[in-house]
Image (tube, rainbow, N blue to C red; front, side, top):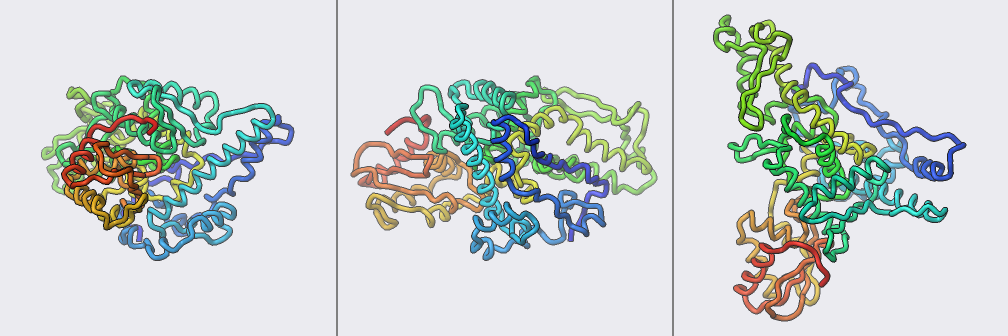
Length: 502
């Protein structure tokens, strides 16, 4: 069933979250309040293990290519009919002692599991709000939200300073609901401002000119970002990116980033191996696979490879590295080729970016350490949570869109709107989605999960359409012609930036 597995898998490779320890009775009042919240948290739900997995000494993350794809186990009818709030409550209160589908998440679709994760995150937010209320009542008022005030032109610097202060002084504040304010703008954050914040900060941090990431597989048509092992930026910057990814998941925001699957496997706790090179660099993987499969006696003359490797840094300069001591004098042969391949992969995927990834992971765990994330999702599913579904179908969005203010699906201007939307190229459709919802990414489960609302905003006029991105509401005047709608809406989606009161 598991198919090909990593044979050198070690259970210690999987990072387990630390257990929450109950504090003694004679703590101060504020610590006692924290105990009240801790004791309301669910029992440890990680105690149940797979007996067969223990006998075989494997873990789900070590399974490379299951003989039966994981999607074949999804029960869509069950997932659609499941009352996820009730199932989550059972799972939260009883863990593995009482049956719940959350404890058997392989049968649930990613969108249903994402809903369970959403409930878990929201309850943590509500616990923090209750704790803040109690502190206020005893004369120690604290803000119930994670409040960030940033300047649009200096979003990275401002976010770094504020999040570093929170992480150092009171890291539990990272579990509060995020509320962002742009300096000099009037928008009140009900979700839309946070989406804009994430969009701006990710766009800047992942810009290759910033030097923190390099672009991999650019010639394949599906470029991905990878940690720059020669970056001049500090570990705090990478920790900030980990915080941003964790906060995005925690606050149900999808990011516009494209990371290789290796990163998601590492976030779920696995130390990556040679097999992961296939996702990271297909050409390199094929070359090393040919080395492993080569059985002729002239392997040393054919490959002329030693345990010294060379690669290019971010500036295009050749860098040499010995995988073992005196590696340039040790030739790769049939006896040691497996060792060479394993050390090569380990250096590229783990050792060379250890400083950068460890900082990134610490930032991520500051937010997600108590989350059931790694027990619910496969790496492929985690990718969907972070950067959304890759299926972009405007028809799904049209089917689930609601209409208000006198509009309905047969209103002429609504027909104009959907003709306009379907005719747009993919890049412009993403701009339209960004304008109406605050994000150009497709949520897990498809565009039909967005629940867009189009409401009438007066009769025909020259006003541009506007949007409440916090609530996915498009305010559309009843334009008299399709040409006018096309012109007004095109201008709106191409020049929209910032928040104000309307």
